[in-house]
Amino acid sequence: MIEGDEAVIRIVAAIAMNARGETLLVRKRGTAPFMLPGGKPGEGESALEALEREVREELDCGFDLSGCRALGTFRAPAANEPGFTVEGELFAVSLEGVPRPWGEIEELRWVDPDGELPDPMAELARQHALPQARLLKANARSLSPCPSAD
View 1: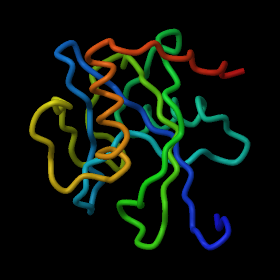
View 2: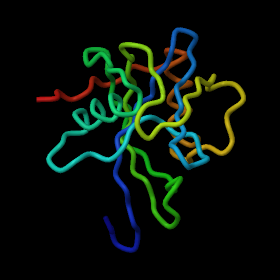
View 3: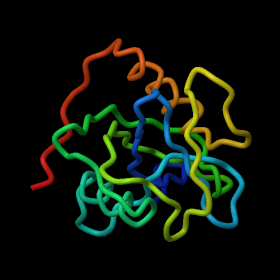
């Protein structure tokens, strides 16, 4: 989609954390940058419906809707589409089941948001998601509930 002079790709993405406070990053097959699980909403699909589908398609698991939290919408240069900006609606989720690389995902990596990070990494993850993950890890902020999937 073109907005003014800017090419924008809208996505939804999950910040999933484990019990150690690590954040899950994924790498798509044939690409180098690590990024958050998620993707583009389909026609008529709500953000939450798209996120549920993407998590299932990429990680072969689900997430607890009651524990899902909306974190906001953020922009950064797109990782795999030169000249595009990605606009990502981020959600904190608690995964149900054991995530595994599935579909287009070649690699999963749990990272400490306060530690050493993989390189290369998508700018949306580096600039926005990992700072949010640090806040989540520290329980320093109250978050808005996800909108209803209805």
